[in-house]
Structures are given as C-alpha cells and as structure tokens.
Image (cartoon, rainbow, N blue to C red; front, side, top):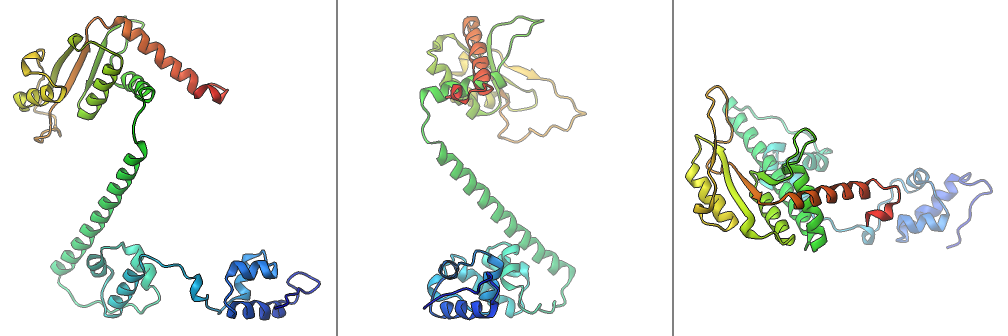
Length: 293
C-alpha cells in the first residue's frame, strides 16, 4: 500500500486517518503504522486509530485475564468489592479497575454485624496479600545476595562493629572489642567475621544481658547453644532491674535478652578496626570513584 502525506505534516488529517485505518484493518500494529506513516505524535496516532480494535496477534496474554473475567462475572451478579476480594484473593484496586464500567449493584440490607464480618474478611484478605507481597520481596532480595567473598564479609564486619560495637572515646580511652546485640543473626555474622580475622576462640568471652523478670536460664541456654559453647563458659549474666512503672514490650517467649561478646587482649585489633573504618569512609567519599573499588 502506497503511503503519502500532505505537504504540511498531518494537514490532511482525514486522508491520513483513511490510510491508518486501512493499515490497522490489514493487521498492522501501532508501531508498524507509526513507522509506515511517519507519525511520531502519540496523540495524533490515537486519534487516527480511534475506534479501531487492535488485531488479535498484538494482544499480549495477561496472567490476570481469568481473574478479571471472574471479577466481572461476580460483579454482574451483584457482588461487592469486599466479597469479590475474599473470593478471588486480589486487591480492591484491581477489582475497581476491572469492573468500573459495570453498573453498581444495589446494596442489600444487612445488619451491622453482617457488614462488620464482611469488612473484617476483606481486611484479612488485604493483610494476607500484603504479607505475601512482603515475603516475595524479601525472598527476591535474599536471592540477590548469593555468596559472600572474604572481602565482602570483611567490609561488612567492619561496618557492623562500628555501628554496634563498643568504641573508644577521646575522654575515655578504652581500646577493647565488645559487641552486644539481641539479634541472633547479627551475632552469627559477627562471629563469622571474627573467624575470618583468625581471632582465637579461646580469647572470646560471652555474657547474657537480660531483664530480671524474663526466663534467664532459658536465655542462657539459647545463647550458649547459638555460639556453640556450654553454659558453664558464660560469664555472669547481667540483670536489668524491673521497673513496674514502665510498660515493657519484650515479654514474649522469644525474648532472649542480649549477648555480649568480648575479645580478650583486643586493643591491637580495635585499632585496626578503627583504621579500617576510616579507610572505608575515605573510599566512600573520595572524589575519584575508582577508589571505591
């Protein structure tokens, strides 16, 4: 098919539309028509093809097509968004998009209890969808890490210690290695880092720090098992006094307090950690980005 434009671009709109419609009915896609007619304005292209359905081959399969069709069917039966959401397990925003052109059903008379129950089920479905999305995001992010090189673990450990470990102050020079945390995973990474640095396990000391009203014995057993030692190797547990005026939140069975990890004769290692940290700071803020590699 021969394609021509009028002397002024888009001047003969009707003639251009006839050509666009003919190409569309011949089975061409929007991109093919745009390139054939040299129409680089999407608004003009939309007007040229207004009312002309896309050929079947250009329609991409949509994983939600079945859900959308079912949602429309249920809406035509008079179902509310809440009921459709519970039935299909999809979000209200998607349902609204799929059925917005359909007539709004009349609301049946319900008691307050019935309405509350339906709303509750809808909210529970929403929470479930959010949790599934949250877990998918975390699993995807976790898979992006893969394996750690020794250098990556080394740099992570330096940052971890400088964020959570004890640090010497100008007014109180105490160059020692002390790391305290309530997160078992943080302790695991810290222990792996110490192992990478060839710290002698015989120089490690462990102590539990916990609220006095918690299950102290269970916490000691938990932390000793976590770092692979017998409870007899734990130093004296530090108990935090209970203040009856405070509303303490960490009262669940999963509360284990904190574990303190000390490295004996760690002054030299502390100085190296401080130097490593400021080396990271210098590399991260260097003007020459090649210094960061």
